[in-house]
Length: 381
Ligand code: SAM
Ligand code: MD0
Ligand code: SF4
Image (cartoon, rainbow, N blue to C red; front, side, top):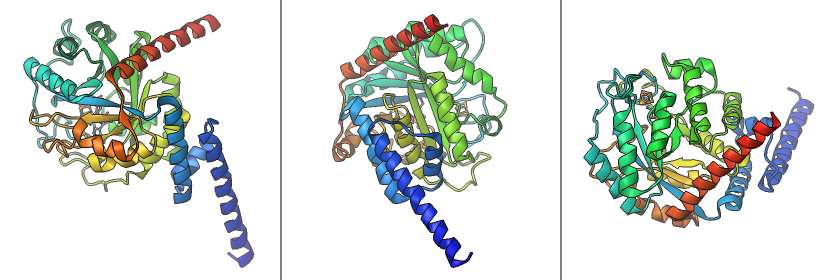
């Protein structure tokens, strides 16, 4: 390149950057953000632009939620699974995975412990355990009973994250008191989906979430970062989250797991996830967006909150033999994944836990407005 060309190149680059800076200032003022700008930020994250991006995301969080964050307790009740997701420690054939199945009494006691510690929701999670993941008439009975028991013991809102379930089971989960159904597509790039969720149906996973929405449940959608997706894939996945009408949206960085086909992949930087959190906050300002302790543990919490997340997830009671998913042990037994453990980080970020009533109110309002939205749609049709 001659000098003239390189000067033109640098000029164009600087112009592009200052345009993006202006876009981010508008985003802070509630103007949203274009797909092209999202892709540029994901592809070339210049530090000065990232500061602006995170500031814009925090401003949107403040507008919708003030300084309050919600806290989710995590109960991984069965680590048995019939599936072979290539990224997951608990895939069927992984002999290194520690397998357990909690009894009803253990589940109730862990839920009580989490409730006493101050969480706002219990996230009941399981692998597709062949013991209950069946189409039989009594399929998922232990999960439905666990939802009922947690509601009786704690009266906290409950999320069910138990993989793909038939519509009849969604009906029973909702009747037992589950407000939420979580089921992560990981990506909306079908080819990549097939590599990640080996042997599973892309459509069935989508249908399960749509059926939960139709039953009036709130739905969480989730994406993996660092599994070979392009920035365009990520942005397309944001569009799909929007079409689904997800109520909570998350991104998590892939953590390589021993004993799995993806074990030798280098651990991806967490920056892409942090940018995705901020972009989702700008694109979906009023939705819940987790900062999961299940990726970078307590040390990774601050950057996720500073990117605009407003829910701390994967708080796990110590001393109960419970595991995380992406980080099966990190920060659990020493109590760092606890309401007490995260308090100093919340304080540094000038945030504070909401009350349970504030969380209940958000859930109720969201259900009501989703219903209103659907009615308007129905009328428009
Ligand atoms: N078995 C159910 C299912 O797959 O839907 C429930 C568990 S689900 C909540 C587990 C989620 O954790 C996955 O959907 C994935 O997003 C995330 N996860 C699992 N293994 C991971 C890993 N190695 N790194 C990052 N995230 C991971
Ligand atoms: C988390 N370990 O919140 C949990 C899990 C399941 N609904 C969520 C991935 O990070
Ligand atoms: Fe099973 Fe869920 Fe892990 Fe896939 S992600 S192997 S379905 S526990």
